[in-house]
Length: 362
Image 1: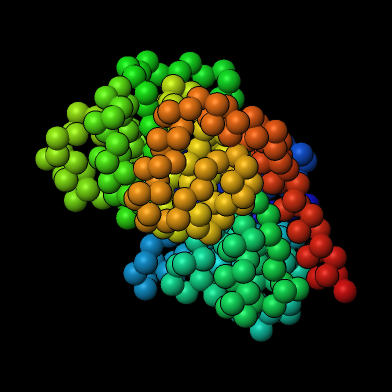
Image 2 (image 1 turned 45 degrees about the vertical axis):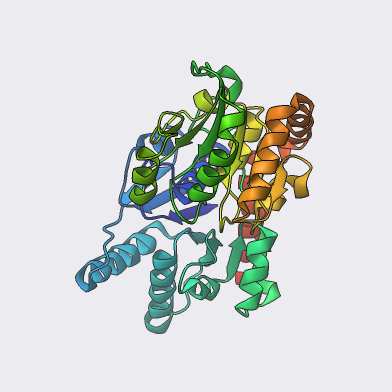
């Protein structure tokens, strides 16, 4: 099968959308498919090429002239590659791919390839454009429900959960040496932002910090919310709430931590929860979007209402006070971990592609 993946870039920058596209390209090429990724490029180009996929540079920008150049390059590339499936992982490229296919159909007859999109962030403005594809894949049932509200027909929707276990981007967590840490570390993996609820974690930790003098919070990800960083720097807890920046080997921190907290206000199906499970770490997550699905409805992680500082504080105290709570969560997470492999995710997408190819042949 000839597959073309469309994604903005292939940078190793902690972006979940890029990570999913890279894992799919590598796994699908490894299993014998003819795979091309079209993007601006980045550190992962070498990786996908080692697995047998190819990369075609795609100029991407937001000015009108840039969009025109992207559209032309996309049309030329897809025409030359003659794929069975074009799979877009981002909103803008999904819209352009639909336009390219529609224009080709009007001038040369209907192209044979099928257009598939993956919706990661359903809260994005204009996300309904993803529904123009022959098949719209959501990364969780929560996202699928949101797309149903946007009137995407049920016959053109599927759910494929993300999977990171066995990813070619990282060494297996068990083979990674834990970072040296004094005391108990509460790790928050991901960008420091309002959407990720970074302020909720700071406020919850502030309430319990005096009772656990050996505990600290580490934000591991891009410190995008400078106002929060400045607020912490001016607080009495500045030496116990650390902004460590992006870590390209997050298992080093996860394996050294006491727990991981994800306090997102919106999150479709966070890869970081799967990474924390693989590292054998107790997890606390906000009960929004796809987080409960990733945590098996609370069996493999404690859930709390988003933005509820007191509830998060209570959950953090439970893990800090009772090691048995963490052990139970880790055991439950390990039990279902195989469901979240990159290989399973890739196979599920291949099933979607084959279904679409069969429909296109009718």
